[in-house]
Amino acid sequence: MAKKLNPAAAEFIPGRFSFASFPTENPPAQQTNQSQKTVILEIPKTQTEKPPVQNQPPKQTETKKTDVEDWELSNLKIGADTQGSKDYEKENTKKPEEKKPQEKKPEETKKPPKQVKKEKETSDQNIKNETSLEDQQIVDDPREHLNVVFIGHVDHGKSTTCGNILYLTGMVDERTIERYRKEAKERNRVGWFLALTMDLIEEERAKGKTVEVGKAQFNTEGKRYTILDCPGHENFIANMIVGACQADVAVLVISARKGEFEDGFVLPTATKGQIGTSNRQTREHAILAKTLGVRKLIVAVNKMDESTVNWSKERYNEIESKLSPFLKSIGYNITTDVLYIPISGLTGENLKEQINPSLYPWYKGPTLLGILDSLKPLDRLDKAPLHIPIIGRYKDIRGNLIVLGKVETGVLKQDSSLVMTPGNNKVSVLFIANDINKLSVARPGENVQIAVKGIKEDLIHKGYVLSEPNNKLDPISEFVGQVMIIDLPAQSVLSKGYKAIIHIHTATEECTIENLLAEIDRKTGEKKRIRYVKGRTLVDVHISLAQPVCIALFKDFSQFGRFTLRDAGKTIGFGKVIKLGPPTKKSTAKN
Image (cartoon, rainbow, N blue to C red):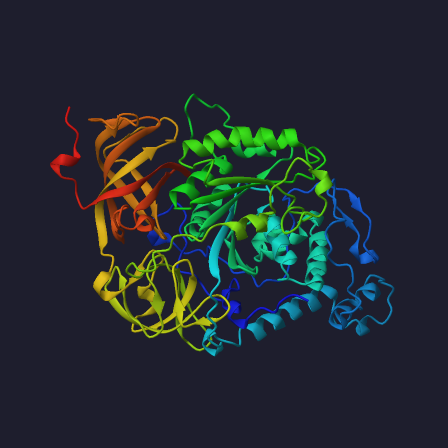
């Protein structure tokens, strides 16, 4: 049996509440969509968003027959025995009768199977929503907490891998797996059943693509983890940024299947020295992860069990040799910051255990969870002033106003008096919780839900910051930044007056390039005057914001001093804040 979820997690069920907007490339004024969902840990997903189709022999009963092309499901120990579950039997006993439309007392069929399923799910949701975080006991877990974001190109198996991790760590049960297996078969997506763990909303299930950021938790003996499953489609990059900005470690999922790695990485018309994205999300996600402060990157070469790969060492080495130079070019140290691992998110091979290591005798390293557990504790700024960027807010069943965010610096304590900026609104902390329990204290790296009073709900927005009154982050409307321009839209140049969207911590705002101050020679550090930028160039720029945003110098608080520039649906550059306010004469290079 899976570990039973704490009712507190129910508050994150999609539709249960509305996050403060998660913007697309539109101005913040248009932010109205949800961008993060929390998984009520029930089942793992399928590795591949496009599974091949092979008839897998049933485990024990006919119900468990699956048509998965080329995918070996025998290693997935799921759905093997559902006879022991009386609830499961009750839920499915009438289905065989219904499939015999022989005019036999139709009135006896009181509820068609689909209706039974929907009514049961609704009932479960109502039970979960009857509780509040306020009802939970305080449980302070001393284990280190890590936010692990899964990123990569669409259909490379991120959600399936996340789902299988949840299953293998005991966070979901076989009954739930079987239910999702049946649902996936009804949707003609047999190989996607593990992915349904993370993809909860109907749009995701209908299209087979992650739209919002899936969120779930699992634990090992030494650490606590929060999974952030990001969408891989280019249309949902803004949502991906919401997930990545909370992460401590990134798992870049790469499909080894023939043609899929190339679809996500190889540029159609690459030019010498180009590191642009051109809608290749493997590239763009890696750039964004680095820009948003993710220091450790695990490259999970997925779908190694697929028939076109068959655990080929040559294919694995080919991917590593092509990807490593790119990762080095965007700032990752390949020796200390990047680790490669071959996996199968569908069968679970090399996730928690090496189920059949004879398939890949050439790999002698640890499993994926072994890598995560072996990471050295991160350097946390627990002695710095408290700063918590906001990602959303909602009201619970008791009417408590709950603010969502991640503690970036400092320590949050119950009954604290804080200030929310912009606006300088004073708030009092009623209680603190993570996604499962109430806490007496929250340290850096902890995802928190904070019950506050003293402020109206409509005065809280994504991108605002909670701070101590004496050490608050003041909102800034202009600053000087050092920016690496990587990929401008076609037939565009970056010059004075150029408008773009800036992402900085959890804030998203319109910005304008007021002036190009200098071009910087990356080898010598020399600066010279420049009027416009065409391609890959490092420049100092004066940027103004449509609305003030709480930021800091990169050298003081890196998480509040790094930013990404996007335009026309693509990342055009990334940089750091080097001066608050307008430039001085010294900031401008001489001719």
